[in-house]
Image: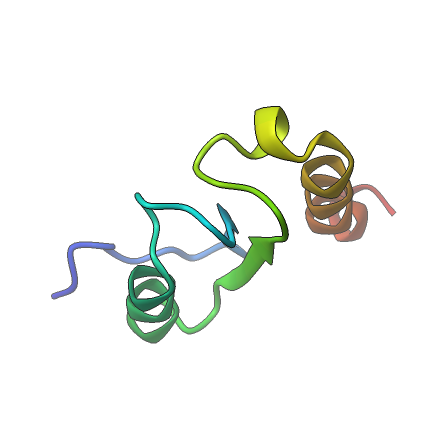
Length: 70
């Protein structure tokens, strides 16, 4: 079993496109381990999404929440 576990609800992962913590390879591993997950890279951001690029981080969060709230 993957260390990502299993999820029965929609899962959203947001990562900074320049993150040294969540690398592109790590995001791909998460996507492969949990195919239902939506993985989005926030442009011009490292690990601190809302610090590095607040408008893009907020847009990514809103896009993830929009299907839940209508």
